[in-house]
Image 1 (tube, one colour):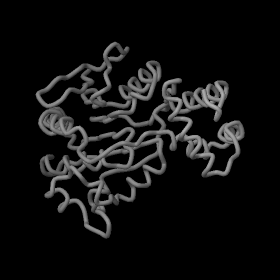
Image 2 (cartoon, helix red, strand yellow; image 1 turned 90 degrees about the horizontal axis):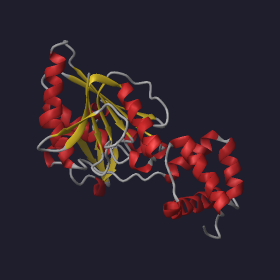
Image 3 (cartoon, helix red, strand yellow; image 1 turned 180 degrees about the horizontal axis):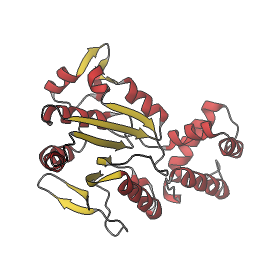
Image 4 (cartoon, one colour; image 1 turned 90 degrees about the vertical axis):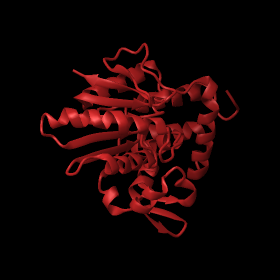
Length: 271
């Protein structure tokens, strides 16, 4: 460890973070935790890590803020384009065939770990373009970071953040304003932003599509399995799961089936 905090301090924080969020810190990435803690203590004018640990152990709101500060929120519009090509050319056509049989014309989606909202807005733009007339969709976008959720709810993105959005989509779904672009109200109305800790059951059921990309990579094996099995419980009998390119369910005790298409790989629940 370092002069900043002892091995005992590190263990206390690591255990609290894991128990509250499933995020797993090891000695190799302790420097990330240390830098985020230093920033938090400076912001709050708190003298040392022991004092702050006592605060977050008692104060649930401050604990939320701390967990927010240690998460990595790297995202952009149309990130991992292959996933959206698979969504357009394989998943949505399959769901349309499945749902037509029951007369259900609404597709329910969860963007879990949505960060600042680029992923759910990308999904919303894509579905707005490709769904047949009179079909509807509902997107729940959740994250453990309240700061990120506020950005998503506001729907304003600086000029530097809109890279990757096709020009036609930018004109159709955004309004230009000073310094950036604002998502139009109609598209915003399709998305519900909500705080959620993946350690807990979301209460959602019968979801047709779940996106949870580049999130479980921060969990250990036990926490990953628990999260994936909660997704299974939340999803409809015929539904699809997207995780990050660097993530895999291989070797995990789960019922999801692996799907490989010409565009991308993902998983399905078909029972």
